[in-house]
Length: 342
Image 1 (cartoon, helix red, strand yellow):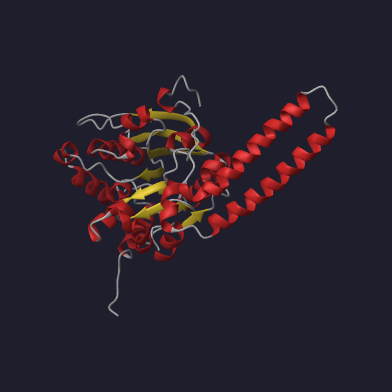
Image 2 (spheres, helix red, strand yellow):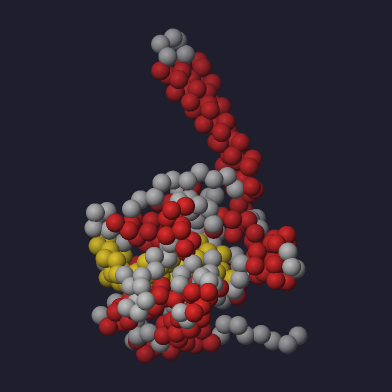
């Protein structure tokens, strides 16, 4: 992808952040980094230092083994609250990163033809493998300037209307739609409400339910409430292993139910917001396994898995007659949210 042709998709700098539950790992990483520096210095020195080099190399190897063991132990039983923290990691791949690595010939579209453009949602034509499609995704931004510009991934009504305009174009040209979801929720500000935030999301849900073209969705980070549903109605929905998907964030749930944010962990468990929980509930169709320690530790692996999942399911659902596809999509939606008296 040519950066000159896509100024909005410039690479973002890497970010180093230590999550609170990863502090023991951070200490090991600092020790490994210090030993690697000492090893490099020993190799540059002119004196006989082969013995020192061997000692450094052996110690580094032992620390790396300990690091991997500890990392696996932490992530094997990650709590809901900690899963949310991983999904929000500043270095986690965002929509523009996926577009840059798995989409060819991306041509971005702007504006809703009613109010303006919303950088919190990116739309455009492109190719995933051999499949021409319409790409739609939330964008949070990486540094402070980008996050303010993208409103931290919280879209305004014009963002959802832009997404719907793009979907209608895809329907017109018989192209499938691929949505990448990563938002804490739709923006709840006064201006957004005045311009019809709830209506914009509701219209998108209705129109996506009957859109005459295949739709895929992947929750790559946060899947917050109506902000996610505004581009989240799909024939097939996948979720990254350490993403979250729920009607409300744990913090907001805690503040409503317990009038304090101190019950976030309890709220996260009650919300059943992890990928595993959503698969059991039937709100998603599959889980894409992330690299050990999260997608931010090895982004190339998750790019490859998302691309393979998208190409496989695009190939499958494009075989359905559109009437059958819409019927199955609506039946799938109708099964969600059922309950039984006990």
